[in-house]
Image (tube, rainbow, N blue to C red; front, top):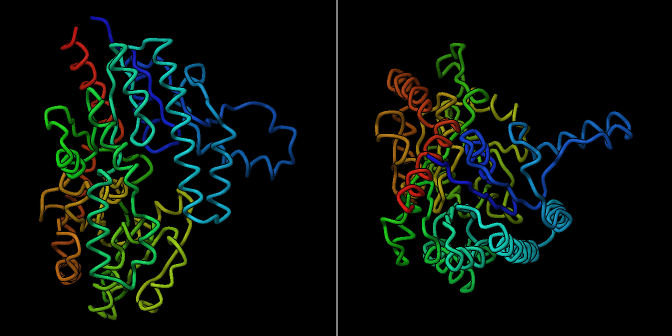
Length: 418
């Protein structure tokens, strides 16, 4: 039986390359189109060795050695490099958001033309950069698949409006995050135009249903983690209180991730043997963090290897996010043997049973976050049991499992249509 030939088009990164690897392995990849991708060449050999190694290390972030370079096409690479430079140079968030929207719309138009020209069996595109392509798929008889990488922006807008009433002191940093009506309308139109919609979590699926997308057109496929990189600590840790009990958060330290609720929980606990470590860049100026001085340690940037070490040295992972698509840090945490405390607005309910290798809490619930941190701190047997369970559960959420689930689904829906 013929395998469908699928094109994948993403203007940036996210998890698109994992889909590409899976499709290529299954003999289903027609082409991967992106804005910038590093194809190794010898030009860097002419640079001084230290500069070469530093630049190559950075460029390899836009590369996967498992993907055949001949199947990759770049569109507008210099536009993408300019956007990345603007973000890293600290340009105002309004300007970088404008650059992202501009890049997405231009990229989408290019991909729509490619669909018309090459007529793949199907194409996977990603929210906010897909509307023209999906409309072209409809008119060309091509299977258009939208990967909705985060909950629908209409839900996010409602959450921001609620937060502005609850925490007016934090609303200054949230105003730039408020989705425009145009973005909401475009995301809704994309989901309506797609033949199928992929979602990383049941939460994302619910937000799509709320804007009128039929549930039967949405397929939930949880994301994965690199189980070779993220591994449990094989050395027995000292038992607290000989050392501090380490609570870990990884991600952007800001409004959408709900970090203010985790900080409030730690501040109210004020426990001498419990320590919070935040890993990730701070959104905005971060003045709101000053009220929590002394209650957390912060590392703004780490290498991948250092991040793996931080996971292994921690005791529990807390992910208090208000609005997610999934939260791949959850899989990294359980792969590292950490019990997790995650909200219902993340992928936590998709990968764990409450009380088995972690806890699921409602958003904004400071008391539950406190309660479960204390339970794990005070009951070392429970902590060890959950840690072992986390490592076992993680085996079902590798990137290999994600690729397998994705290709199986695509084959099924393709053959049901012919």
